[in-house]
Length: 174
Length: 397
View (cartoon, one colour):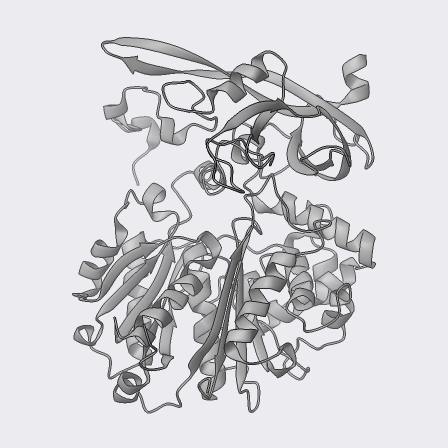
């Protein structure tokens, strides 16, 4: 087998360093590619939202463009609670996918009796390994993730993006 | 459409599973060759339908419209159906459900259901990165969900807390399945045997899982032939094995909508099993041998509960009692299961169903004496969906 150092051509030269959305770990969030762009615009304003059906009252998560209970298209954006309690969690040191530096902490959250969304499985950040305990309170945290280019006519436009996770309440106050 | 015949599983074949020096079509060809060795009378021209089950071929092999390519490589010229089907870990058992419907309605007569995955890439990072694409990309994968051990570790922690399940009980699953697999040259980890001591002292993967609690990803392929009972009698002299009943139930994605009270309850598996038992006109106590989706040791423990083989919460004690061993009341994963074979997603279901076919024909390596009813189960989409297929030596009346 040829020595990599001596190889004349390595990689995928045809792509010439281009962004490849099929390898992108984040959503395409912009209006040009996603009817749920409002969710991400709301995140930027610190709001954690989803769609509620105006006909049957069902609150779904993730949000959608129809109600998964009655298939109505008459939906409105509503705010969800941003605090929850950790039911159980796991900390991964080895084998986390690229882009998720260890420890990758995942937790199953309980949002309480009054929340229409009772449980979510989420990532916990801003938390050292060994710090999190069952029963701890966590809250929503929004952060910037890499932008991506899109072609608009002959121009290349840059779409900035955000995503969300949860973090321990006490570390945020320090 | 009225039922015109009964669908049977005629036979099948499995490629060597493991980190293979092979590309995806090599694996499909190896599986078909093994299937043809198992059914010597079968000719390519006998096969009128092809269902190709793969998840990663689109990304890892740049083969998006896979089915016609597989047909060409196998020398098949299907006339009734030629499709790719993807339900991730349940791929080829889902294909068997579809094939049963096609055969019993008269649309097809002889269908090959084949699954294969080329998981390992020139650089190891790409496999885990691709796993981010097999769940709900925008909502689950961007959370870092997609690589299974952390999720199933949470299930195990919760099952231990609620029902008192222990690491020793989980190790009983690993020991049983590795030792079954030590007799199966196609298994990734053949001829490895496993002791309780080795299982319990293995390096930690994700608390509470050691290495042998987790199945490996593997490259591999499998194939089975599903046919009408009339055509099956032309193709083979072996006893007929009927697909008596099936059930498949999907409830949510991954991060949201979990249907259970906690992660330790899998009501969606219970529901899929109820549908399959009803269609098959059997009850859990009738099942003589099963292949359940042992992606992790804890999975098999929850599965024996939700499939009704023991009471809810008693799965740990059930597996530790020896019930799943070859001399137990209901041997499970008698070919080694996912733990010993590794798990090429689309290939695992047909691998399981081929083992059950052999069990009901009385020719398995780890043969369960006098087995009449058998059950195959897959979970898929990181426990978002459950698939159950029940076989028997007699058709449903």
